[in-house]
Image 1 (cartoon, rainbow, N blue to C red):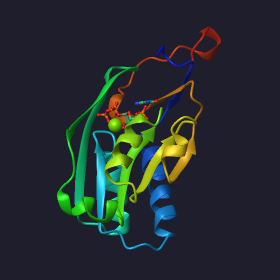
Image 2 (cartoon, rainbow, N blue to C red; image 1 turned 180 degrees about the horizontal axis):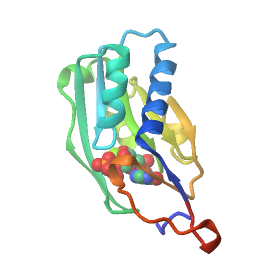
Image 3 (cartoon, helix red, strand yellow; image 1 turned 90 degrees about the vertical axis):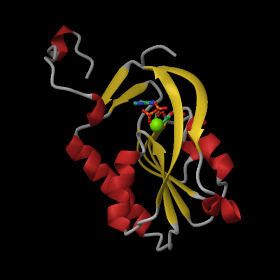
Length: 165
Ligand SMILES: O=P(O)(O)OC[C@H]1O[C@H](OP(=O)(O)OP(=O)(O)O)[C@H](O)[C@@H]1O
Ligand SMILES: [Mg+2]
């Protein structure tokens, strides 16, 4: 995969707002969640915001490593799954959270573990969209989302000089 053409930088403020919007949408489903599963590492950030909003206190992780070299997706590797109790009833009543779905491969792998869980991401690209139940903002496949935890302050080229942001 080459570097996507477009950039979608997200600030902490915006991420908090978007994660809260996702919490509002899920709250509207009026479902009793028995646990939340955060997909590490990116899913830990929205998970923290959403479990606070929804009052969920049982938080588990699925630890997956996939993007080993910036935009180059390596083979997906499950480093850790969830405890047996969450797998009961195919994950019914479990809320799975990730920051985004891109190709949908990560979501597909976790869905396989808990087919009846609800899968929510803050952002979704078209290829991953069919793999998630709920998301807030769709960005095009040729866009790279820059999350605030990956960023630092740096000089920005003016748009007229070819700046892509
Ligand atoms: O839909 P996909 O193409 O599978 O991509 C989406 C996944 O990629 C990123 O995680 P990454 O594997 O980079 O690890 P991280 O969360 O530890 O940063 C992101 O947080 C999603 O989990
Ligand atoms: Mg991730």
